Amino acid sequence: MVFSSYQFVFVFLPIFFLIYFALRPNLRNLFILIASLVFYYLGDSNGITALLLAIVLNYGVGRALGPAATLTETPRSDGWRRAWIVVGLVLNLAVLIWYKYVGFVTTTIDNLASTLGHPGLVPIVEVALPLGISFFVFQGISYLVDVWRGTIAPTRNLIVFGAYKSMFPQLIAGPIVRYKDIAEALDHRDVKVTMVYEGIIRFITGFAKKVLLADTFAVTADALFALPDDQLTTATAWMATFAYTLQIYFDFSAYSDMAIGMGMMMGFRFPENFNYPYSSVSIQEFWRRWHMTLSGWFRDYVYIPLGGNRRGTVRTYVNLLVVFTLTGLWHGAAWTFVVWGLWHGLFMVIERFVDTSRVPTVLRWIGTMAIVVVGWVLFRAESFGKAMDMLLLMVGVGNDGAGRPLGEFVTPWFLLMAAIACVLAFPVYPWAKAHLAVRTRVVLGAALFPAFFIIASTKVLAGAYSPFLYFRF
Image (spheres, rainbow, N blue to C red):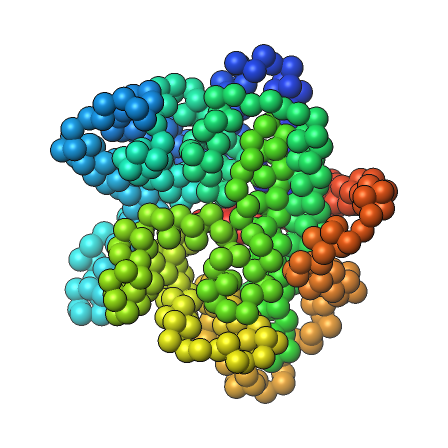
């Protein structure tokens, strides 16, 4: 069930919060667990087995790691704990590999065997991908590692842990919420009116970004990327890439806004996930601003354990490339995603030994965006061939001018939304919020946010095209 669907906005969400606010506080975690499992089942009835398995597996291993209640209790023996953390990590990764990567691995082996003259050497295994598995497996790994490190104590309460693992706002596509982020609120939280109001505003912001902006760009991007190469021109190739660059940011950041807003309404503070990444002037800065919970996860659970930057220059570069290879694989089981990850990793390495501090800021921004945009072509294209054709067309190679006209895909509404998006991609909103008087902000908010919600709702109720990109991952 997509957050921008009328079933979610006008049926599931109102029913959930009516019951949630009516319940006694000690029953709310149980209700979160039940409602979240219903939410997931409605979206992927077959995949719910993987989610339930992840809940039971990580709860059980967390208990086995100990201590059982508080961090002051006597810990279990080091050998016991090491054995259990290995078991927990292996089982989590096994679930992820089976569901997400077994088809990719067997297909790759089969293709290689066929090239060497041995077709059919390995049977290709196809497994349906459960929704959000990359998110809830990484969430489970962070919980176990934090328990093992002694950062948090494992919970004894399966209902509390189940509510944490399955919490529907962040279940399908993040942000990746670590147990320590909301552990205190899981045990006790006051749902205050001010926090609920703040959550509603945040949800409406995300809802409007998704429906009015991202969905508008999706129509153009999908139509252009679906065209055969002989129907594309340099102009339409650039427009396809421009539309997708806006789509993926406003789609994913909108989902995070809605998730964070619903978390606030429930009494939780989820971590931020985006901080105007398209304003970055380096790839390092981009990854400090883009999908921040994923970047932080790889930093804390992969990069630093590998040695980070503490074992010399060469090892630092290797660690960065390993992390970004895994980042690409995390996004999708395809070689295009791996190359996309390596593309970003390569420039992370280059920036380590190339001093650009004297380069004008605007030129650094242009260079950063060029790298990001080329990466998005790899990310979006269905194959390397399609990606290369698109990139060549963007530099004028292979274009005979006989393709479809640009005006066929660009409407006045698209141009208006693109202009607004290009402004909102930079920190204009927080700047305006900081400089406007409180009374002015209240008046504008009272006028604009209901209008945004009504316009976006009208579009949703009209059955407009509304895909969600990160459901694939």
